[in-house]
Image 1 (tube, rainbow, N blue to C red):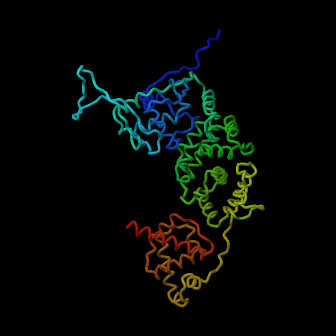
Image 2 (image 1 turned 30 degrees about the vertical axis):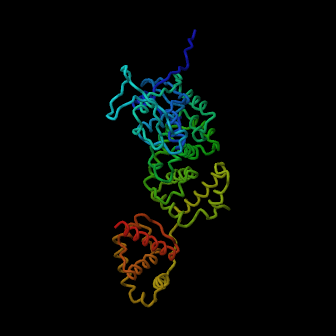
Image 3 (image 1 turned 30 degrees about the horizontal axis):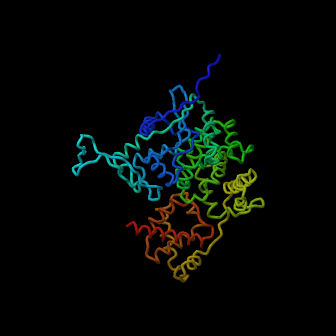
Length: 475
């Protein structure tokens, strides 16, 4: 006969005991299926601390016990926001705000004389008094000792589910969040008990997701986890694309594997090395997975990674999002309300692949001859004869300058770009300014240029003036 043991137990532990369990790693708050802390606003955060200090009740926390070959693990599956908020306040992570409700707490304290000594009555008993304390603007360190002890000794009910499997932990997390604001991205992860740790490994640790393209809120609310799962789905299982996060999570849990996540992680590491600050409008949380999929296809073509960076620059500079490919532009497709539909994603990928292939396979076109003297005179509003008389000098000076500041092989040295660089050289003599440091910096950040040389000159001139202004301020 199979014995049936209790599946749960209930206990009450002091707040300080629970925080110590956190510090010792006995109580874990980082289960792969669990959403991240830091989700509460300041009002919720302050209200919880005030509730504890006023000895009012809070909901019990829920824990799943898991038996592993390395020992017993206790996972917090409900109440994470409460416990981490209390932990933050205990460590002076924030002060209570001015808008907290019922901010004055009453507590009992032994009376003391002006010297700080305890006062006794005529029978030798200690005398006590009731004191009022305003919590607004107070860190934990500011509290009187009596309130610190009340905070530390506050009893928190803990419901512990015993001997849980990964599947049961996911079930309990969903069950406790049925009536709470767990969003679609966070809920989807709970269906990935086989691969959740791979999703979290990449979303938390990969350097690419640490750039400022992604807001802190997106790191906390499961958005990055969604980007990771969408990327794996799009890269390796697009034929079975699922629009809903839950269905996508269930599918990947059955059909994906560690090797696919390793491939994504490696690709992101490579992208991180070529990432530039002005790529924020490319790698948005909405479209990142599409560009990650494009990069995966690009890698299979065998080109150096910097060529993909050059393509992004070319895409941005030439506004290719508005270039019509097979009857549609990327911008037009992007305006579709159903951006997660398989057809919409497929169309975006087709457009980007066509543009990328055209860029990589394009042959060098004949350089359209520009009358350099006329061009420089026009953009700088100078007399052409003045330019003509000193043209050899300007050309020689430009060769010396670019030889010192621009690396061989840079597209900035292309013959098509000579006119705008020459105009910058003449501009420097007219304005009596030095271009050396600026051009070194500019060439390091830019490998592409506008084919419209007047537009390219104005772009470089604006960049130089901005650079010079910042340099003056720094100095």
